[in-house]
Structures are given as C-alpha cells and as structure tokens.
Image (cartoon, rainbow, N blue to C red; front, side, top):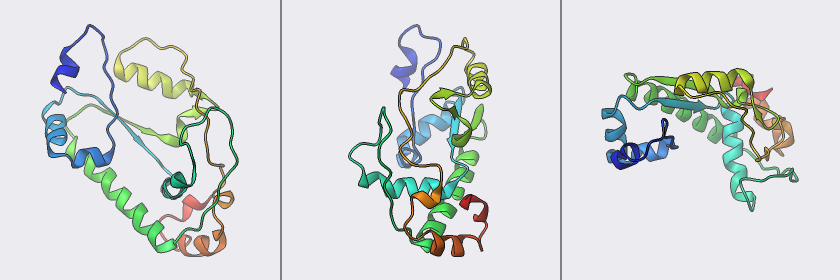
Length: 173
C-alpha cells in the first residue's frame, strides 16, 4: 500500500476495498493508521435489494454487462434476508467507528447514476472531495437487475408479509 501511494506523479490514487477485505488485519491496520487516506464510502440504502443481488449473482454467467440481459428470479428466505440486512447495518456502523478520524464521503448506490451517467450532483461531490477537475463520467456497464423487487423474487408475497413487520419495511418499494 505504501508503494502504491508513494509511486508516480498522479494527484489522486484510488482503490476499492470491500468489507471482507477489512477482515485482513494488515489491510485494516494500514488504513486506520493512514488517516490522510480519504474514503468514499459507497453504501446501498435498500439492503433488501443488496441481499437479493447477492443471491442472483451465482445464477448469472457474468456480473458486468454492456447491454441489457434477461432478468432472473429467485426464492428469498425472509429470515435469512432480515439477518443479512441487520448484519449489513452493523458493518456500516463498524466502518464508521473504525474510520471516524478519516475524511469520508458517504455515497448512496441508489443516488449514483442517471442511466449510465454519474449524476451531476454526485459527480460534483466526488470531484470536490478528491480535489480533482470535474469531467463527465459515464459507465459502459448496465444494471443487471430490474428496479422492482417483485420482478426478482418468486415468493414476493411471502417475503413482503414478513419484511413489512420489520424495520426494513420501506425497502419493499
């Protein structure tokens, strides 16, 4: 990590770290000790969609596509979905505590894109945070999953009946 940051003349160096990467004590310690590292913390608001997306991943031959593909559907165990969403909330809280001394910009996945373009207001926030020139940002990758949870789940009514009685009820919409 030190060599990554020390080399070259670029103004900004960016890398992606997933929560499971922070289970590595070396990586976690290095990031915590280097408080000058700025963190773009990308989170999903809709934790139910996050859970469903993870379930659907193994059902696809590719996780990144450049043209629309047919939707796939799965069955969701309500108890497992709730447990996963609660665990994710705990991860978000733990992350905030671990990196409370770092400059952070929380970003919401649902607010990132308008079609394939990074939303203007999000791009402005990111560029200002990284202190780089603002340029148009477009992704060639298209979303795999439909917007509606109902279109991804074969047992939607069963799931909705259970989720609607939890703190995650607003994630059904």
